[in-house]
Length: 277
Image (cartoon, rainbow, N blue to C red):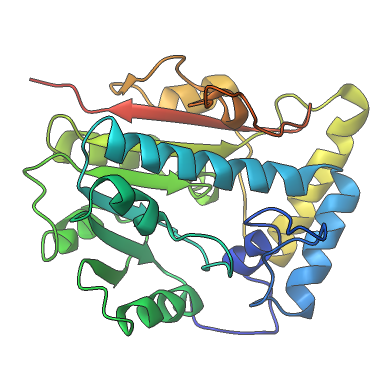
């Protein structure tokens, strides 16, 4: 997507809350946002109280997942589809991976020009194991083909799809997209997925969730809130890490259990593996 400050963008609205709160209680994200982004972000929170915490939960889970894959699974190659805008004061996901795998290679893929520019600024800092590439999740074959310029896909690779699949409409074939990745990646490769849902919303809040999704669709991009069963169907053929498809706050919980969790709403999440022979 070309850069524009007039129409809200997915990564800028998301970035409003990414990274959680600073010691003064202010949200760390938002440096790259503009008035239209903040307006729709605030409207969504008005309709769905606690939504900003769902964004933080999503980000916290992605950090845990990357650390787990690098430390416990020994993954050294990552494809991050829809990486979002870097947040000041927050580590980049590649940095988390390299804490355990110093030679890990990272490919950031996005179709938003502002995101690509911000990630290319990391290249200017001399990170020769980071690559940035234009790509659209709705064209998985092209992403995978172009990824081979930077990565060896005959080796296990982790693919991150954090809060992006709900922007793939049913008519664009999300199940086929997931199948393409599953059938192309090497055995032992991983998938990290988070997906927006209306599940968990209390009866008196469901109308607000629906209204927020409609407002977001009109102002930013069409979004499809999928149920547990619908998201689970997208993962057909993947082997899911226990406990399977679950709330973001219920996966890879640290031993001290110190994860902030709001009752509702929430997002679905999974860590899966390519396990074919």
